[in-house]
Image (tube, rainbow, N blue to C red; front, side):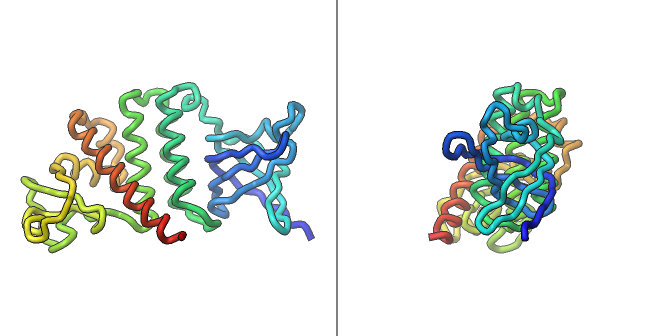
Length: 247
């Protein structure tokens, strides 16, 4: 017996198959990540192609077969045209989609991730968002995304001794997942990233999702570089752990 399903989802990846087929990776409201097979969808006369494309939010219908899900209908909910017309925004949404692809491999409903995608795509699609703020949406997504996945960093106290942080000298530990104070750094002499209190405060606001304040901040270039460094290093650390777990 064929079972039919319908849901909404963010299309974050597409792979061509054979001459005219395509497999879409979609993070859905009801099932989490799924892969749906679009039979002959790349043909000019395909009706399905008018309702689904990469980096869109679509309502999709599919049937569950023995080995795969086959797309039967698709309707755009939001094509996020402003993102696709702006190279900077398009690059950010590609990076966000890569995060989802790298960290979420199985079907598992997660409303927090779905809402975060909706929130981040919506912010990027806003015409009033300054181009200079586009990278900041990536950090906003990244830190909240990994927090949902169980990697929320400790930013309020030292992750080693649990004492209140002294803003004068701070370090970030990928291995411990948070900020380390000067005493713990000196005692253990670990190879940690030297950070500052301003960047830690920005991270706290990001994880609180306090966009009303974040959107008004004038962030100095050195803090943007530091935020990029922390995010990039922590991402590499987490990815290496995920890769080792899947060996």
